[in-house]
Image (tube, rainbow, N blue to C red; front, side, top):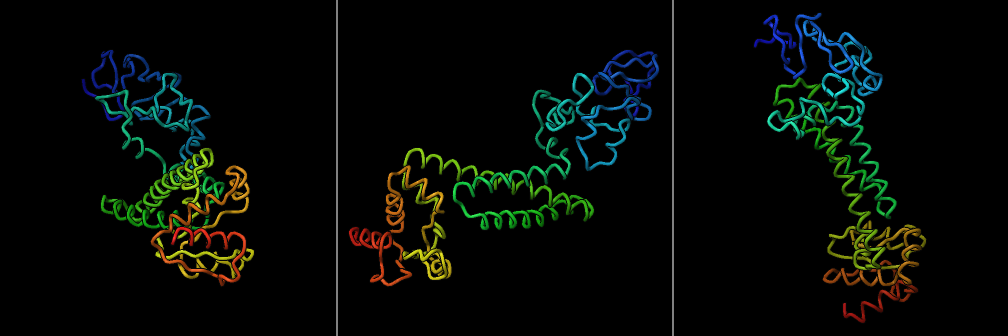
Length: 307
């Protein structure tokens, strides 16, 4: 059996299947009835319109506004000839290993995603991860900076790879950017989800050690700072710790209120933080003579431990 480029048969009178496994009868009008649509193999186009859901599948492709030229229904090939779930691109014949038709070929599936979908999905995952981070008391700015760095580095690497594979600069840059946004978004979502999971577990089990780690900032510094809050102003220990590059403990007020109620006393979280700083150099933002409240309790606890 010999097939033309778009699937028509050279041998007249043959009643069998075309290259997609669709019943073909060349003695008829030369068209293939694919579920609910007619396909003309001579011109490689459908001659009946696609359904409206496929028109909105890919708003970035102006060809999709021509309901007769749109090929998405053919590519997805559901039993009805229509793609009922255009937002779930997992049933296209081209995305399956022909030796294992029940399995999805990830590389083909990923390669078939439009750059607009990659950017949209990546940005959405990033926003979800950011929301989870902020809701559990994490800092938004470092999270955003890490995402931006990931996108920038990923775009540079992806563009280079695409250029090496023969793409022109515009397509290479766009593809590299889309891939980097999607991948960075996945990592951002994972980071936010992990933090939310750890916070939820620590809150539910009253685990002071995990809770302390979640609100320890600049944790890899060789020194840590204690002191008075001073309303969070420039004389407070947080501002001075940031300026000096020290590790410090800080918990948003709304989180502190919730943790204090859950743990009966949030002081156990402060204690856990202090124990975790063993081996580091202690710095204080205020004179010990001025130590009051939590600052004084922290100093007393360190003296008790001999730290």
